Image (cartoon, rainbow, N blue to C red; front, side):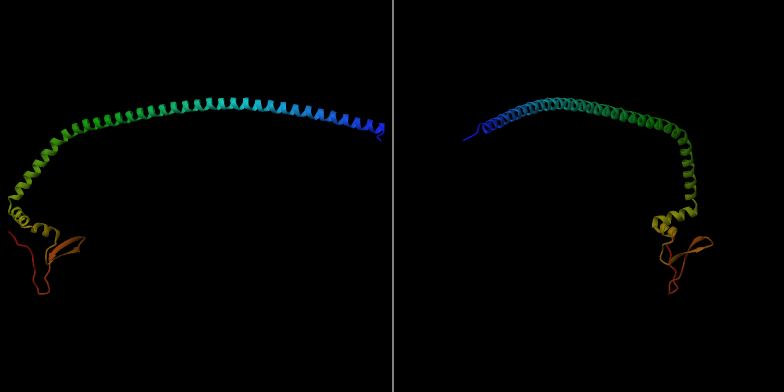
Length: 178
């Protein structure tokens, strides 16, 4: 049979176990409540962070669009300014060049007419007529370049001299003279 003392000890132990279980349940409820509070705070904080991030992203996109618009405007004005500078420079160059050309044109025209007059008077000389005849036959270019059959060039006294030479048979070839 069970002794009363053992029974009292068993009941005391059972009572102690009940108190400890009650305390554990109370602590578990406190932990769950604390965990639920933390979850709610994290959810609220996460929602606030998403809202702040959305607001910051929107602001940065607006700033980017504004800067792109400003860059386009600056490029347009720079291009137009460069175009106007080139246009003014071209117009000024044309105006001053034409004016200078007009003044020098008279002098150049006179010089050309004078050169043509000199050339025409030389062409009427016997040497000019022979040169004209050689040119018509195609021999003048060969003569001036010393490229004919039986002709050669040598360097003498700091210059190049063109002269005929005889082939192995002793023949010298040249050009027909008019």
